[in-house]
Amino acid sequence: MPATSPDGQRRVAIVAGGGSGIGQACAVRLARRGFHVVLVGRTQARLEAAAEQITAAGGSAAVFSADVRDWNRVAELQQLVAGQGLDLLINSAGGQFAARAAEITENGWRAVVETNLNGSFFLCRHLLPALRSRRGSIVMVVANFWQRGCPGMAHSAAARAGVVNLTRTLAVEWARDGIRVNAVSPGVIDTPALRRYPKHAQAAAAVPLGRMGSADEVADAILFMGLSPYITGEVLTVDGGLQLVS
Image 1 (cartoon, rainbow, N blue to C red):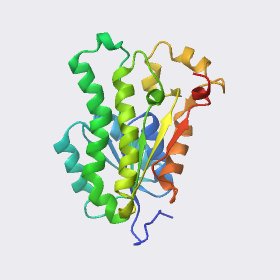
Image 2: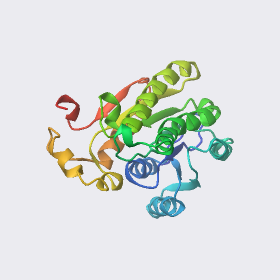
Image 3: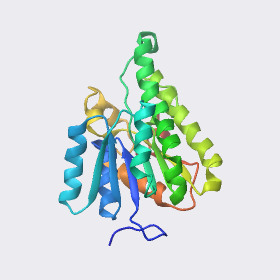
Image 4: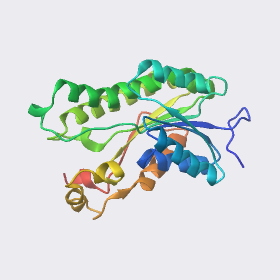
């Protein structure tokens, strides 16, 4: 049976970064629960492949190609759900590259901060009317760099720390509209993005549980935060205990 909102309509979720990794895992799980899922990302081919996987399994999915740094393009996303409202926004769009602070250029800094911080705000701000109409929920995905000094990731860590504060601020400001805003903070997770880093196996060795996490395990945490009706303004760390020892 499809998941329905209190007004009897099918529930709708938007997943930014839905073409791969954690975002795709979330989209697949939501579709299995009966949500209509809108996949957002920069690479049309990845989005279409993920949507095909969902529809082949009997789910409902659409794609929307966009760079979350583009204020005007993200504004068009609101038009896509304006007539039906939005129950859940998952923002797993993000990106970074390893570099010492003294080596980061202006363009490098802007690219990372604008994707992770500006993109998070643009999505929330433009989708506010649709979320308000369904008393929806937001979950930010913030890589675990923000919790401590992180040499080699100053740009990403600063942006993620900003997203955490944005999460808590919006949770307070939008509570009267019935909108909950939370974050999930993954550690060393086995995704295509992480595999590009040559030292990812070394990072996994430091995890107390002795392994990397999976995208599906993080997706479970995201859906828990997104669908729990009395949790807001919280950050759930999913890192196998890495924060306890690093």
